[in-house]
Image (cartoon, rainbow, N blue to C red; front, side, top):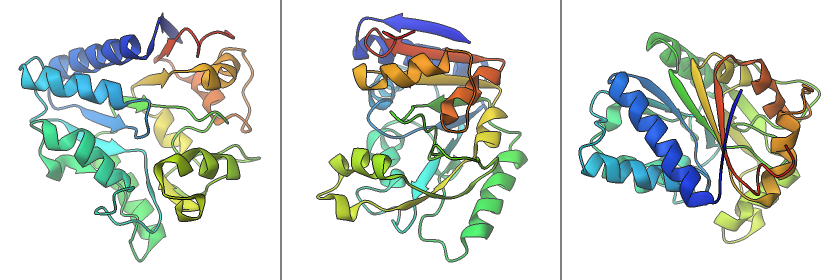
Length: 241
C-alpha cells in the first residue's frame, strides 16, 4: 500500500487528478470506477481543467460509479447521477452512454444488481477505482457489519452515514435509508485503487487502514489485501498513521 501525504486538500486533489490523467493517457479506453461525495470534488475540477487544456482525453473512457441512493431518480438533485453530471460529466468530452450508475428507481433491484455486475465484467472489469472513505470505514456503501457483500447489492445505510449525508439534504428525514452499491469483492477486483482522504475526521479510519488488522467492522481495512492501492491524504487525515 502506497501512502502520499500532502499539506492540504488542494494538493491531494491536484496529485490525484495527475495520477488519473496519467493513467488515462497510458490506457485511453480504460474503465474507471468513480466515487461521489465532497472528497473527490477537487480532483474532478482539476480533471475538467486538464480536459479543457487537452492534457487528458475522456472520449474512449468508460466509467462505473460505486453507488446510487435507492428511490432517487437520476434527475433528483441529490442523486449520484445528477452529482456526476453536474460536477464532472457535463464538462468533459466523455460519452455519457459510457457512464454507468445504478438505477435507483428500478423495479427489480436484484436484477439491477446482477446487470450492473455483468456490465462491469463485460467491459473487462475496473482498471482504476477511485474511493473515498467514511469516518466509520465504509467504502462505497459497504457499511460496518458482521458480514460484507462481495458484489453489487442493496445496502442499508447506518445512522452515522445518514447523519453525515444529511448535510446535502434539507433535513435528515429526506436522506434515503438504502442504496445500491458495488460490493467489496468487485472493488477488490479493480486492477488499481486510489483512496482519497482529507480532514481530521478521517484520521482514525486512515490510521486503522494501516494498522495491519482486517475487520468487517472496518470495511476499508480489506484494502490492505489489494496489491496496488495508493492512499492520498492530507496531513490531518494521515496524522494517526
